[in-house]
Image (cartoon, rainbow, N blue to C red):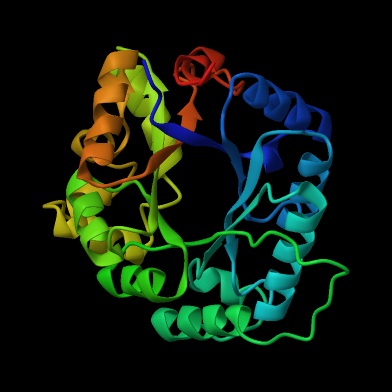
Length: 291
């Protein structure tokens, strides 16, 4: 059975360098096309991407998502060109505006997200004072986009978009905005268990940092959720709607609903159903491998 999973999101900051490589090499053996590494408060994302690319041969490495308040546009395109050149084109650049805290922690003012991202992409794709001995393969640029205005930015200035924890209806609307030829990746946290309590506990661990963020609340409200759903630790119905769980076939059905709605691929975040176990749930990862 063909897997719709095009990549796995790896919380590399919680792993030692040895563990990062053990995980990535196993993903490569399982035939995963890509691994996505996060940009939060830990390691520098492009340095880590370089380390992983140097120690692998087939798997692509994506920044998921490098936020644009951390680097100016020239620094970002310079990183992408260098990583692409060193890896024979195995780097994927994911970018996003993130949230106001990303600007505030650097002493920067939060700007209009649409204007900020548009100007940033135009600068990246414009003339830059960069030189390499050869022309490296161009890295695709996918931006994090949920609202229709940011999705339109992706349609006009990027190679595609990434969405996170959104329903298939959102995927269909995103495809309509992006058009037929842009890439749409849907990031889904998934949990392989038929135990509702374990699944929802794992889902809440994935959701908790997003519950207070207005950008996510606005999106969830569009699909019938209210403040009661994101208050506290989040309602059961919020978890059940946005965190696919159950058997492999049940999770696959949820993934395929996005593919049918217009997604090119699923980027999976693998949740461990055992709250005392922080290890990668390899049974889930292996279930959606390509080998």
